[in-house]
Amino acid sequence: MRPSSPWIRGASWAPPLLLTFICFSIYLYLYSNAFDNMRTSSVFRVVEGDIKSVWRDNVGSLTYILNFKKDNSVSFEFSSEGMLSTSPSIPSSSITFHLQNNLSPSNEKIREIMKNRTKPLLTLFTSWNDSKDKHLVHNITSVNWLSLRPFVVPVVFTNESGVTEACNNSGWMILPVRVSAAEGVPVLKYMYIDAMEKFNSDFYAYSNSDILFTDTLIKTLLSLLAHNSSSKTHTFIIGKRTNVDNVTMVEGSSWIELTKVAKKRGKIFTGYAEDYFITSSSYPWKDIPEVVIGRRAYDNWLVLNARKQKHQVIDASDTILAVHQTTKAGNFEGHSHKNGEYNHKLLAKLYRSIRYGAGVTDCAEKVTKLNKGEIVISSRTKLFRQCNI
Ligand SMILES: *[C@@H]1O[C@H](CO)[C@@H](O)[C@H](O)[C@H]1NC(C)=O
Ligand SMILES: *[C@@H]1O[C@H](CO)[C@@H](O)[C@H](O)[C@H]1NC(C)=O
Ligand SMILES: *[C@@H]1O[C@H](CO)[C@@H](O)[C@H](O)[C@H]1NC(C)=O
Ligand SMILES: *[C@@H]1O[C@H](CO)[C@@H](O)[C@H](O)[C@H]1NC(C)=O
Ligand SMILES: *[C@@H]1O[C@H](CO)[C@@H](O)[C@H](O)[C@H]1NC(C)=O
Ligand SMILES: *[C@@H]1O[C@H](CO)[C@@H](O)[C@H](O)[C@H]1NC(C)=O
Ligand SMILES: CC(=O)N[C@H]1CO[C@H](CO)[C@@H](O)[C@@H]1O
Image (cartoon, rainbow, N blue to C red; front, top):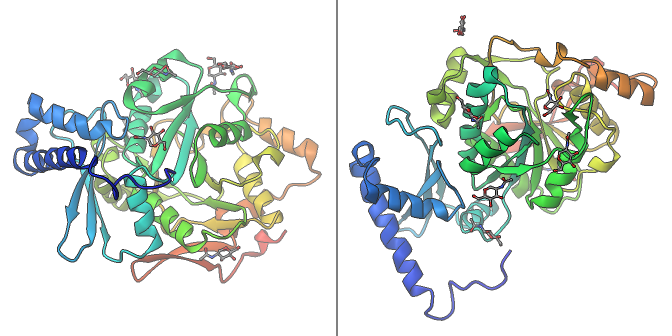
C-alpha cells in the first residue's frame, strides 16, 4: 500500500489525470461506437494498449469503463476479452459493479484495487504440462483467469519452457515447481508457500487447471473479506464444480456466456471432488503433509483436516460458479494417472484411519448464500452423519 495519496495535494497530478481522462473518453467513444470495425485500427490499439499497460498486461485483459454519476457514486464496467479473442465473433463479458453505497467496505476495496493502492483479493495458481490434447482447455483457462484481473493474480507453476513462454506472453505470472514428487508432480504445500512469499493478496488458492471462474468468485471473496476483516481465524473455502462438456473458447472467455452454458449444459458434480482450495493468507500450509496435486485423496483429506483443526471451513458452492471443462478424458482424471494412489499411500502412513467421507464439500460447517442480492455466510443447519469426526 502506498502511504499518502498524491491525488490530493499539489498540482502535479493534473496532466496525468487529464491524459487519463482523454484516454478514457477516446476509449469510451471507440468502445461504444465502432467496437468491431475499430479493432484493427491503430488508434484503437494504442488507446487499448494504454489502458492495459496500467495493469501490466500484454495481450488481452480486462478493460474498464468508469462512470462518474451525478450522485457521486461510481460504477465500473468490466469487459473481459481473452488474449485469443481477436475474432470479433467472440463476445466480451461485461459486468457492472455498482458502487452506490460509498461507505461499504467492499466498494472501498474495489476502488482501491482498481487504483492499485491495495493488494489484490486472490493469488490463484495452478500447474500443467504441455500436452496437445489439453491445448484448448489450457488456452481457455488462460483467457478466463486473466479476465479476473486485477482482483485475481493468475500464476502457473511450471518448469517447461513452452508453458512459460505461452503464459508469460499473455500476462500470467510464472513460478518454478520447486518441490515435486511422484515422478515430477508438484507438491501442493510448496505452491502455497511460494505463492505467499512472491505475491501479496488477501487469499491464496490452488485450482485445477481445467476450472473456469466468473465474477462470482470476486464477489464472494469481497463479501467474506468485508464480513471478517478483523478475524484472525484460518479460513478454508471450497465448493462444488459444475461439469460442462466441450466448453468452447467463445463460452469460456465470457463470464456471461459461461454462466449461460453452465445453466444449460452444466451438471453439478459430487461433493467428493474438490477442485480448488481458497485459504486465508495465514493458513498454516507448512504443517500440511507433502501431498501432490492431480492425484486422488488429497482434496478430501485437506477438508477433513481443516475441519478437525477447527478452521473456518466454508462451502461456497452456492455463490461461486466453478466450471469444469469436461473433455473426452472424463471426470475422474486423477484416478487413472501413474502413481494414482500416491497421496493415499502417503497419508495412510501418517494417519491410522482416514475418514475421507467427512471431507466432502457438504461437510463444511459454513455455507455462503445469496440473501437479497448480498452474499452472506451462515452455519449449515444439518450435517450428515458421515461428517462426524
Ligand atoms: C501496483 O503497485 C505496486 C507497488 O505498490 C507495483 O509494484 C506494481 O507494479 C503496480 N502495478 C501496476 C499494474 O501498476
Ligand atoms: C494455446 O494453444 C496453442 C496450440 O493451439 C499452444 O501452442 C499454446 O501453447 C496454447 N497456449 C497456452 C497458454 O496453453
Ligand atoms: C517474461 O517476459 C519478460 C519480458 O516481457 C521477461 O523480462 C521475463 O524474464 C519473462 N519471465 C519468464 C519467467 O520468462
Ligand atoms: C524446476 O526448476 C527449479 C529451478 O528453476 C528447480 O529448483 C526445480 O528442482 C525444478 N523442478 C523440477 C520438478 O524439475
Ligand atoms: C511434467 O513434466 C515433467 C518434466 O518436464 C515430468 O517430470 C513430470 O512428470 C510431468 N508431470 C506430469 C504431471 O505429467
Ligand atoms: C463433445 O465432443 C465430442 C467430440 O469432440 C463428442 O463426441 C461429444 O458427444 C460431445 N459432447 C457433448 C455433450 O456434446
Ligand atoms: C460473516 C462471517 O464471515 N462471520 C464469520 C467471521 O469469523 C468468525 C470466526 O472468527 C466466524 O465464526 C463467523 O461466522
